[in-house]
Length: 83
Length: 494
Image (cartoon, rainbow over all chains, first blue to last red; front, side):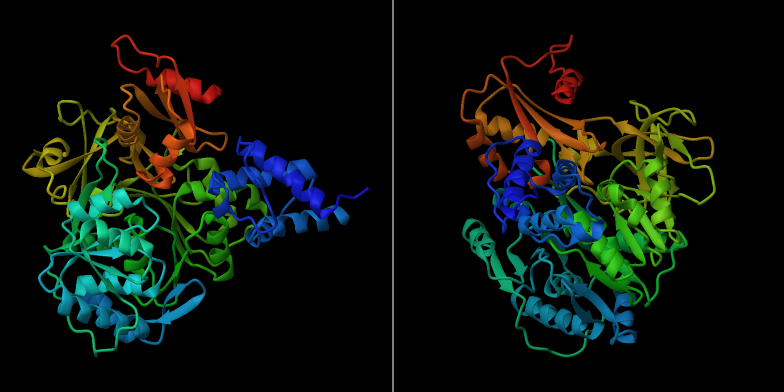
C-alpha cells in the first residue's frame, strides 16, 4: 500500500533526527532550514542522501533547488513513490 | 581603479550592474545611489576616516562601499549574521563612529545602544547629480577586514587602494579577459575579501554581478544562478563543488568560461569531474590570505595537461604579477629549492600591517633582503617547475567553508564561558572530506546546551563546533600539552 503524505512527513522526521543526531527535530510542511538547529549546507547534502535512501527515490538537482520547505520535499517523494 | 570604474559607469550606464534577489539594477541606478550616499557621508561624516557598513544583500550596500571609497574613506563591513559581541569588537577596534545601513532593524538599534555609533540610513535618499572624481589616493586605506584571532579577538587587516589596484592588475595579467557581456557570480559574505574580486573586477569593465541571496543552503542557490543566468565567471570555495558533486552527471554549464577556486585545498579528482560539467571553462586554483589582498598566487588546471599535485591536492601555482614569495625555515632563512618551509609573501598587494596592533605585526612581518615579508603560517614547498605545493599549517588555523578559523579563538571563548582550564577545539574531516569543528571539554559540570547557546552569541556560525564532548581528562602528550592528534582520532572514530 502506498504511503500517505502524513506518513511520509513522519518518516522524513525520523531521518532528520538520525542525521542531525538529535531527537528534538519536529518537522511540519512549512519547516525550512532556518527553523532547524544543525540543518546547514553540509547537513543538507546528508539529509537529501539519507531521505533518498530511506524512500528508494532519487532527486534531481533541479528538484532540490526548488525545495522551499519540508512540505515540498514530502510532496515530491509522494509523487515519485506514486509513479 | 576608482577612475576606471567611474568611466565604466558612464560608458555602460544602461547595462546591468547588479542582479540582486532577481532584480536588475543598471550602472545608472548604481551611480545615482553612490552619489546620493556619498553626499550623505559628506554631510554627516566628513571628518571620519573609517565608515562601517552593515553588509546586506542589496544595491544600497554595494553603493555604500563605492560611496565610501569615492568620498576618500575606508570601509569596514559588518556582517548582520555575526554575533553582536563580535560586531561590537569590530566597531571598537576600527573606532567606527558612523555606520551606513540599508535596513532599519534590531541589529542597528542594538549596536547603536551598545557602541554609541551613529547609524545612517542609506535608503530613500534624493538624487544629487553626477559622480565626480574619487577623492581616495593610492595610499589611503580602502577597507579593513577582521579575521579570526588566536587570542580571542579578531584582528583588523587594512588594505590600501594601491594594493587593491595591484590585485586588479595582477588578475588581468592572468589572461582572464572579462568585458561588458560577462556575468559574474558573487557568493561571498562581504566581510570575506574574496567578495571584492567578485564585484570590483566586473564593475571595472561593465560586466554584471549576480549575488547569491543570503540563506542557509547556499549550494543550490549558487547552482540556480550559474545555470539559469548563464554565469560566465565564478570564484567559489571548493566545498560548494563537493556538495554539488552527487549531481555532477546532470550539470552542464556551457556558458561558464572562468571557474576559479580559493580558500580551501582543491582536489584533482573533483576538478577533473567538474571539467566535464563546465566544458568550456578555464579552471584556476588561486591562493592568498587577506593580508595579501584577495589572492596572490594562481595555478591554471589546463585541460589535457598533467597537473602539479601532492597527495591529490592541486598546486597553488606561482605568484601573480607584483607578488613575491619566499619559503623560509624556522630561522626565517630561505630553504633549499624543493624543501618545505613557511610561505612568506611580499610585494604590492601586501597590507601595511595589522590595524593598531604592533605586537601582532612584530610576529607576522619581517625584513629580508631589503624587503618586507608577511609570514602566512602556511607550509609549502616549491615543485621542480616553481609551482608552490601547499603542505598544511604551521599553527592551529583551519579553513571552514573557506573562512579562516583560529581554533584558539574558539577555545578562548569557551574558557571564558565555562571557567575551565582545559578545552580543545580540533578540526576533523567528515565523510565528504570537509573539515568540521569538534570541541572537547575537561570536567565540565554545567549545562552543555546553555553553554553552547551562549557560545553562539560570541562566535559566527561557521566557527561553532558541530559536536561537543566532555571528558574526565583530556589526553596529554609527552610535553604535558593537550594531545591534539589523539583528540582528532577520538573525534574521527566517534
